[in-house]
Length: 112
Image (cartoon, rainbow, N blue to C red):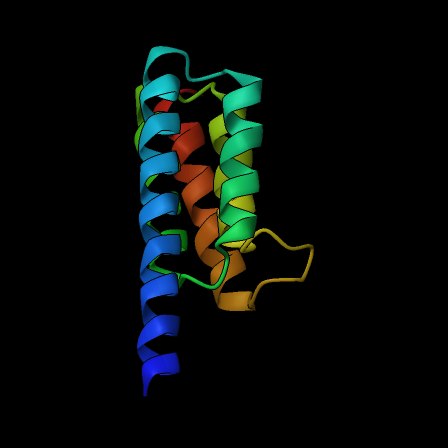
Protein backbone atom coordinates (compact mmCIF):
# COMPACT_ATOMS: atom_id res chain seq x y z
CA UNK A 1 0.00 0.00 0.00
CA UNK A 2 2.87 2.37 0.83
CA UNK A 3 4.53 1.61 -2.51
CA UNK A 4 1.18 2.23 -4.21
CA UNK A 5 0.82 5.65 -2.61
CA UNK A 6 4.47 6.39 -3.39
CA UNK A 7 3.86 5.43 -7.01
CA UNK A 8 0.76 7.65 -7.12
CA UNK A 9 2.74 10.53 -5.62
CA UNK A 10 5.48 10.10 -8.22
CA UNK A 11 2.92 10.03 -11.03
CA UNK A 12 1.29 13.19 -9.69
CA UNK A 13 4.69 14.89 -9.52
CA UNK A 14 5.32 13.90 -13.14
CA UNK A 15 1.98 15.37 -14.19
CA UNK A 16 2.74 18.56 -12.28
CA UNK A 17 6.13 18.90 -13.98
CA UNK A 18 4.53 18.29 -17.38
CA UNK A 19 1.82 20.91 -16.76
CA UNK A 20 4.37 23.48 -15.56
CA UNK A 21 6.70 22.87 -18.50
CA UNK A 22 3.88 22.96 -21.06
CA UNK A 23 2.52 26.14 -19.50
CA UNK A 24 5.92 27.83 -19.76
CA UNK A 25 6.33 26.73 -23.39
CA UNK A 26 2.79 27.94 -24.16
CA UNK A 27 3.79 31.39 -22.95
CA UNK A 28 6.88 31.35 -25.17
CA UNK A 29 4.80 30.28 -28.17
CA UNK A 30 2.18 32.95 -27.49
CA UNK A 31 4.98 35.48 -28.01
CA UNK A 32 6.51 33.69 -31.00
CA UNK A 33 4.35 30.94 -32.45
CA UNK A 34 7.13 29.83 -34.79
CA UNK A 35 9.91 29.43 -32.22
CA UNK A 36 11.56 26.21 -33.38
CA UNK A 37 13.31 25.59 -30.05
CA UNK A 38 10.07 25.94 -28.08
CA UNK A 39 8.28 23.50 -30.40
CA UNK A 40 11.16 21.06 -30.10
CA UNK A 41 11.07 21.28 -26.30
CA UNK A 42 7.29 20.85 -26.29
CA UNK A 43 7.56 17.65 -28.32
CA UNK A 44 10.30 16.36 -26.02
CA UNK A 45 8.05 17.00 -23.00
CA UNK A 46 5.16 15.21 -24.67
CA UNK A 47 7.33 12.20 -25.44
CA UNK A 48 8.47 12.07 -21.81
CA UNK A 49 4.88 12.14 -20.56
CA UNK A 50 3.24 10.24 -23.41
CA UNK A 51 1.37 7.96 -21.03
CA UNK A 52 -0.80 10.85 -19.79
CA UNK A 53 -3.60 10.49 -22.34
CA UNK A 54 -5.45 13.74 -21.63
CA UNK A 55 -2.27 15.70 -22.44
CA UNK A 56 -2.56 14.58 -26.06
CA UNK A 57 -6.09 15.96 -26.36
CA UNK A 58 -4.87 19.19 -24.77
CA UNK A 59 -2.06 19.32 -27.35
CA UNK A 60 -4.54 18.97 -30.20
CA UNK A 61 -6.51 21.87 -28.73
CA UNK A 62 -3.36 23.94 -28.20
CA UNK A 63 -2.22 23.44 -31.80
CA UNK A 64 -5.75 24.29 -32.97
CA UNK A 65 -5.68 27.60 -31.08
CA UNK A 66 -2.39 28.60 -32.73
CA UNK A 67 -3.59 27.48 -36.16
CA UNK A 68 -6.65 29.70 -35.77
CA UNK A 69 -4.40 32.57 -34.76
CA UNK A 70 -2.13 32.04 -37.80
CA UNK A 71 -3.26 29.44 -40.37
CA UNK A 72 0.17 29.66 -42.04
CA UNK A 73 2.04 28.57 -38.92
CA UNK A 74 3.62 25.37 -40.21
CA UNK A 75 5.01 24.60 -36.75
CA UNK A 76 1.50 24.49 -35.29
CA UNK A 77 0.30 22.25 -38.13
CA UNK A 78 3.29 19.96 -37.61
CA UNK A 79 2.58 19.80 -33.88
CA UNK A 80 -1.03 18.89 -34.51
CA UNK A 81 0.19 16.00 -36.70
CA UNK A 82 2.64 15.03 -33.94
CA UNK A 83 -0.16 15.05 -31.32
CA UNK A 84 -2.58 13.13 -33.57
CA UNK A 85 0.09 10.42 -33.88
CA UNK A 86 0.87 10.54 -30.14
CA UNK A 87 4.50 11.36 -30.91
CA UNK A 88 5.15 8.13 -32.79
CA UNK A 89 5.46 7.09 -36.41
CA UNK A 90 2.72 4.50 -35.97
CA UNK A 91 -0.18 4.92 -38.38
CA UNK A 92 -3.35 6.37 -36.91
CA UNK A 93 -6.77 4.83 -37.40
CA UNK A 94 -8.71 5.47 -40.59
CA UNK A 95 -11.27 7.41 -38.55
CA UNK A 96 -8.60 9.64 -36.99
CA UNK A 97 -6.91 10.13 -40.39
CA UNK A 98 -10.24 11.13 -41.94
CA UNK A 99 -10.86 13.60 -39.10
CA UNK A 100 -7.40 15.12 -39.59
CA UNK A 101 -7.86 15.36 -43.36
CA UNK A 102 -11.19 17.15 -42.86
CA UNK A 103 -9.54 19.44 -40.33
CA UNK A 104 -6.77 20.30 -42.82
CA UNK A 105 -9.31 21.03 -45.57
CA UNK A 106 -11.23 23.33 -43.22
CA UNK A 107 -7.94 25.04 -42.33
CA UNK A 108 -7.17 25.59 -46.00
CA UNK A 109 -10.59 27.19 -46.42
CA UNK A 110 -9.80 29.69 -43.65
CA UNK A 111 -6.73 30.96 -45.51
CA UNK A 112 -6.70 29.59 -49.06
